[in-house]
Length: 452
Image 1 (cartoon, rainbow, N blue to C red):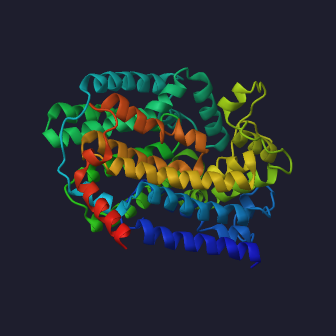
Image 2: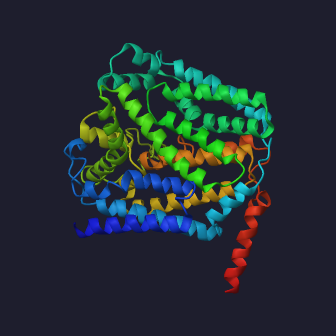
Image 3: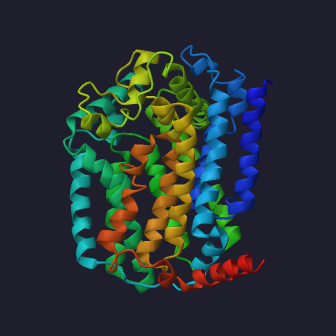
C-alpha cells in the first residue's frame, strides 16, 4: 500500500468515526447522515481495492487508476466532515438533541395552504400523466413486447427523452413536487383521519409509480418507496431507535430489491448476474466514473472554471456547451449518448481541481447540516415532515449526480423553497418560535459553554 492510498484510508475511517461520534449518523436518518453514509457506500467501501487495481478493471474501459484518485477521495471525506462541523458550530446546532425534541412534539394537523396544494396537485397529476404517455409506449409496455437487450433499452430511453415534450416538467413532478405533495397528503390524512386526504395521497402515489417506471430507470421507484416510508415513520409519536435501525435495513432492502429486479427485467441477465450488476452499480461504477473525470481533466481537457454548469456557460456565451459528464463519457467510450455521473467532487475537480474538491466538499457538508437544522427547528406538521422526509431521501442521489443537478432538478434546494413558499400558511418561521422544545436545551448548552 502506497503512502497516498494509506492517507486516503485514514481520512475515510477517521471521517466515518467522527461523523458517528459528533452527529450520531448511525442512530437515525438525517440529511447530513444519509448523504455521508451514501458517500461512504459508493466511494468509501471499495476505495482501497479500486485504488490498488483489484476491482473494477473489467468495467473501466481501459482507463488506468488516476494518481489523483486517493487524494480526491480522501479530501472529499475529510472536508465534508469539516464543513458539517463548521456549520453546526455556527448554528450552535446539536442535531441529535434537535431530532429528539422534534419527535417529542405532537403531530399538528392542517398547516397546509389548501388552495395552493390543490393547484399544484392537479397540475402535477396532469403533467405526470402527460409525461408517462407523451412519448408513446411506456417502459412497462415496452418490456411486454420487446426483448431485454442493452441496445434496445438505451434506444428506448433516448427516444423517450427526446420525443417527450413534457420530459423536464415530468421529471420535476416525479423527483420534487410529487413526493412532497404525496407525503403532505399522507400525513395530513393521518393527523385529521380524513378519507379525502387519504384518497388524494392514493391518487398521487399511483401517478408517481407510473412516472417512476415510465422510462425504466430504477432509482425513482426506490426513492419513492423510501420517501413514503420515512414520511410515515416521521409522523409517529416518538423517536424509537430500534425502529430507526430497522429503517436502515429497509433502505438497503429497497435499493437491493429494486436494483436487482430492475436489472433482471430490463437487461438480458440471469438472476445472479442481476444482483452482481446491482452491487457493481453501487460500489464499483461510481469509482470508475470519478476516475474517468480524473483521467480526462486536465490531462485531455483543461479545467472549465465553472463553464461545466449549463447556465453559466450560456451566460458566458458558450454555444458549444457539453455537460462534463457527457463529455467525459464520450471521450472514454466514444458514445455521445451516455454519461459518467459521479458525485460532487467529480465536476468540481473538472472546474477547479483540488480547490474545487476541498471547497465543494465543505459546502456540501455545511449545506446538509443547515438543512437538518432548518427542518428540525420547525413544528411537526405535514409540511415539515414532508420537507424532511423528501430531503433525507433525495440526498441518497447526492453521491451519484452533479451538485448543480442535485440542488435544482434533484430538489435539494428547490424542494424546501417549494414547501415554504407555496404549501405552508406562514413562510419561513423563526426557529426559536417554531420549535420551543428544541430551542430550550440549546440555550442551556450555550450558557454552560460561556460559564466554563
